[in-house]
Length: 408
Ligand code: C2E
Ligand code: MG
Ligand code: MG
Image (cartoon, rainbow, N blue to C red; front, top):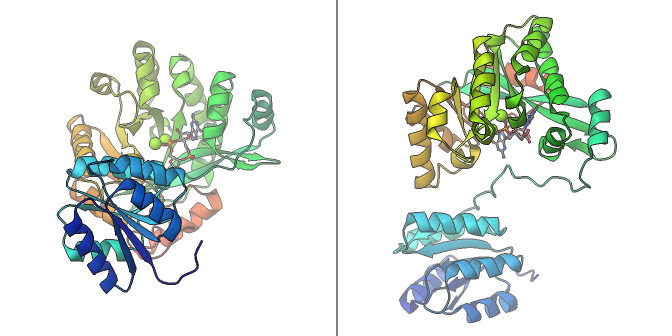
């Protein structure tokens, strides 16, 4: 990598007038600038000049920009990427996603024709963050059923709690329990790595019981006053177990917690898999007083008929939509429609993955009830949650409103 201090902007656009104007604007910003009109010239310049920024037009006669972006991704290009084109916002949005999936750092999307000021702003932008959520997980061999069995029996599973707040005034309303495995050699193993193992090895009931036991235990003795509700995730495979409602009820009774304080979150895929059985199991839970939330709505196998038939009390919009609302008109439209759908069915609506004040403002404007996300608070240990609640009483639990950073 060159260590030259001046930013180097490489432009790919088959339209010479656009290319020359872009070079002019860039040069006025004190940045180095080069224009290329074809994909081969552009890629040669990437290799030779090592640009810090690239501006890529999506539609060109010899190649398309998607191919260019894929090639940049394959070459592990570290430059900030500005995508430009006159193809319409849906296509631009799809191109942005695909480029991010290739690991590129997309700093701006510029619909054409763009003004010089737009290009300037795009080049000076600090860069939109890579989609969070999808943090890399420490690599390791897949976990085995026996090992997981040992962890459940040996008390090495614990829960973290992620707060959930009202959108209008950020008042905390409850928490979601998220399981963690303290592994002796691998550190903290996230649920994505072992929930499937638990389901396949028929360990999921024991895992769920352990999470519920810890969750309601905390609710009974340690929950800060504002946090009255607990949500737990229920695996798809448990929705065929007719004894589920009785087991959960017994765990609540043992802790002295009434089921109406506990929400069972099921994923869309799971809820819809065997709709007849799921209807029985979920209705039994509802009759006993548990609340039901349809989790990750929008990314599974949606069936609006099932949504209407199953006795849900809450709809949780998947974070992939929520995170995108500040910069994607399509995501905003979907989120707004899902809020309307939920309210129309009498459900409360929670946005997952709230991570910015901009997203919060849009959710408020669209009437969303509750929100959860790193911007509100990350999943945390009970002791940290107590501290988070104290800060939130002073208006600073989240870093969306009070201006105080809640967590790292
Ligand atoms: P979920 O129920 O949708 O839980 C939310 C997940 O999104 C959590 O990941 C949480 O850390 C993450 N998250 C929340 N806010 C943000 C945000 O602003 N940005 C990003 N990037 N991520 C955010 P986690 O803890 O890794 O859990 C992943 C999934 O594993 C859960 O998704 C749930 O489906 C499953 N899971 C977790 N605990 C349990 C459990 O006890 N039982 C079962 N069956 N499944 C569980
Ligand atoms: Mg959940
Ligand atoms: Mg979810």
